Length: 197
Image 1 (cartoon, helix red, strand yellow):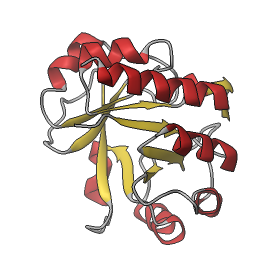
Image 2 (tube, rainbow, N blue to C red; image 1 turned 60 degrees about the vertical axis):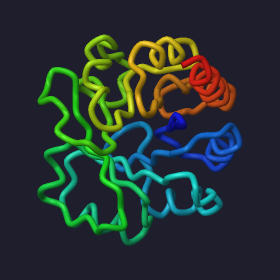
Image 3 (tube, rainbow, N blue to C red; image 1 turned 45 degrees about the horizontal axis):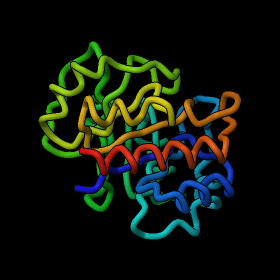
Image 4 (cartoon, rainbow, N blue to C red; image 1 turned 180 degrees about the vertical axis):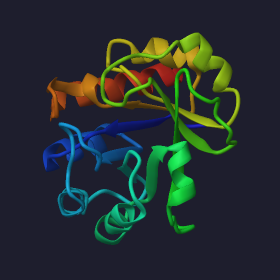
């Protein structure tokens, strides 16, 4: 199994290119209120040249169905990522993968498919308890998020053994400002750690 490496909160074309060139398997575009927020048109524009094997992920939080449908129509993502309970109110076509977000301290993941596991608040750079995450990772395809960066991702991978890893704030020089070097270092560190498993 190949480790999925996701870079989230991308806003600029050259950072998208950096992530793809370094081997990211998924790129997240944030439509929720955040320093990383983009419009569907911006996301479409900077993701036009992403290869088909790299998943384009719409990252939302408690969207209304109309808000989601606008993102679907204008951006056409491969994946919708939002809190698990949000999906019951959204019209998601079968062509779009669902990545429910489960949060530390909340209900345990209830899926055998891909899901994201992170702390109580997205984008705050807070790591979760990796020992507890390792227990949960035995079911389904966990994409581990929360406070990951180039310095700690190898330990996280060895401890949790997730399906994937996801970083956002840990790849920034300032809130919402991705750093090309940090993106490349994170992906390289994750790929190197995968080889030691």
